[in-house]
Image (cartoon, rainbow, N blue to C red; front, side, top):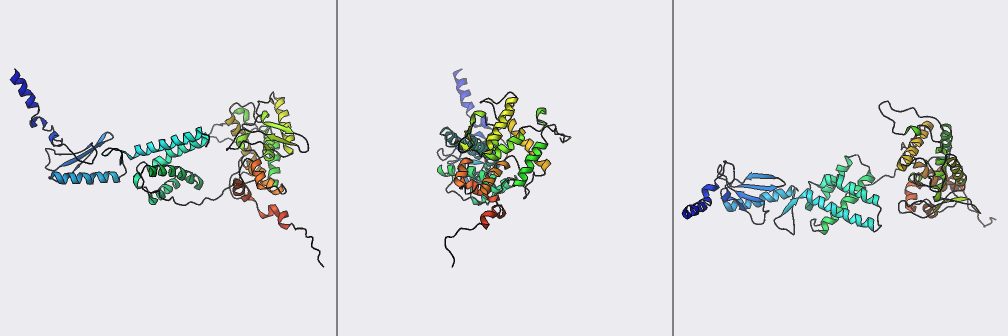
Length: 439
């Protein structure tokens, strides 16, 4: 009995039990690892061929190839060449701290993106950036940045690769400013690659020149026409809906809102952004009477600006009329919103205001500006700032920028850029008074 048991143990280790079940199956005794290559890469023999074979297992599948040689040493050299070609495809990346271990290029890129996002979240916690900025970074990194670089060798990203990236974004019909935003996010990945010694040097991105496209302000004549149209349409019902589309606006807002005329004038006399319209409550507005009559606006923080601002004198009467109207409807309390207080969904309130303003512009035939750029509710802010630049006397840009909760650079780049020589003809034709008496 003991002899039979010993025989069975010995027989189980004989080579005859390692014969493959098919001609293309590996001979188990021939499976050989190659020094310096991943453990999942093996060379072996099959019964159906005299040549050595190579196989590499990764991500649930095998890559198999004949080495066309019967010599073992030559087969090992060819295995190294096979692996170099795999790395060149960018599908696999060797881990520097784990020799012989590889991960997919896409997996490493994903890990890098998560590392960048973790750093961005820390900036949000330190109040260095807004949460909206983090969300934008996440959308761009996990979107088009990942889509393009996931099959590119991360250790070999160069200027040519970045030019292809810009071309990839251009094919998506993105504007130059949006492409520059994607480049800024991709640069974060490249810096991290360089810091981890995966990328030897930081390549330069192609330079892009963006053209300033201001939304465009209204002239004084156009502004008067807008106010007249908003009064004319007050109470009218909109019927020009496309036949194939269901109106997205609530039925309650199919009529021109009564407060649109006041909203338009309020924006022009207070410099507020459209986004402020949905946030302004009566408690944010303080009426000041004295040597100057104006509104002091303590609005919620926006774009890192939280300082109070002041309005022009006409805004006092506009606001008091609006509050009286809202009080007649049962609103007007400190915690009630100044505009569309009945709407709990404040995003919808802003959308309704934008939709109604577009209705006014189309009726007044002022939707498109002189250069073909569509005007929106934001154009009223441009109008407010432009009017101050034209009719505000000797107001300096710093004072105007701070009161409009923006920067001097933005004033010069987007608002002052739309001014024409004719708008400031009084300054051009003006003369200095000389104290020198001519003989």
